[in-house]
Each structure stands twice: as structure tokens, then as C-alpha cells.
Image (cartoon, rainbow, N blue to C red; front, side, top):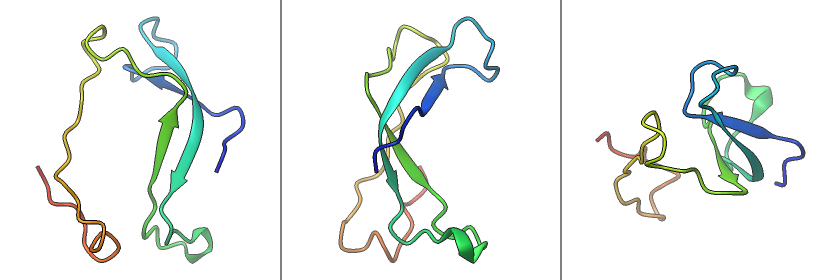
Length: 83
């Protein structure tokens, strides 16, 4: 879906920190099996696509994350492996 007015502050744990990097979210990908009314928090995850990239490397508090390759045919039945 297309979020309206949703922003993130990256690279900080306190919103008032002057080193924060503010970005608008232009796309929201909610897990297709998420059900807010179920109240069991299963599949309670979403990915936020930012309108502009983050300056990885310019801020020591931001870093890249590496995920294992995922098989699209098993994604709805298996969780990604740790590490």
C-alpha cells in the first residue's frame, strides 16, 4: 500500500538526536497473512521502502544487514534461518 505521511528516523535511538536521518516511506509491504483482528501477532511484520536511500557509511550507527537467500516457494511455510 502507499502510506501517507509516514516517516522514519534512522541511526538514532532518541528522536531528538541531531545525527538522525529522516526519510519518507513511499511503499509499505505488510505480510500477506497478517491479521490485525487475530491478536496473536503471527506474521506481524512489514517492510518499509524509503523514498530516498540511507547514507550507509556516513553514519557509524547505520550498517547493512545480510539475509540468507530465501526460496519464494517456502517463504509462507518457513522462517528465514538465523545468521
